[in-house]
Image (cartoon, rainbow, N blue to C red):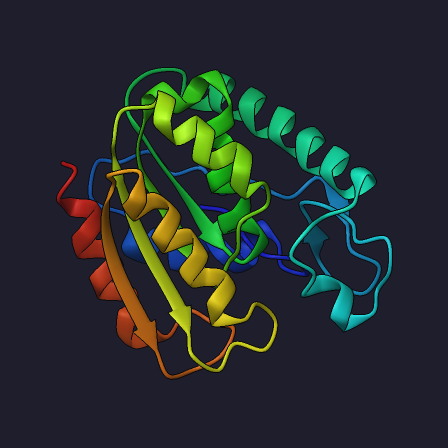
Length: 195
């Protein structure tokens, strides 16, 4: 379970532990790059203007950061979860990184993806990749009043996975860029269906 931009592993861990089914191994990675104001980030935006973080496409340098973070995650999985099925997920940038893991060979082990308050990073490449993979399951959650990642960007994820034949669990909530407490149990129940 991966944190978002300006977060860190210690901020994500209590939530991840709360929704974790009994007997599962939990990895809560720390993003590779320090954020200039607080916490960590999976990729660094070239400009700190808030509008830049709402851009639908990343720059070449930002995509290089995504790839560097993917290498870090691939190594972490190899060392700390070398066997068995995986459910990968996260909030905001962490949810984007979960989707990006589907580009790697480890995708064959991924049985579910959790995307909360996030967007697509490489939509065309992911659409092509999903045609190569077996259909799996997606848990999607997004806030109607999300100012950081507009809900339209979130819906693009749900539509992409649905069109690829994935089973998609959808939760749209009336709040902003957050994981509302009242929906934690829904994610825990969804995860337990894999056991």
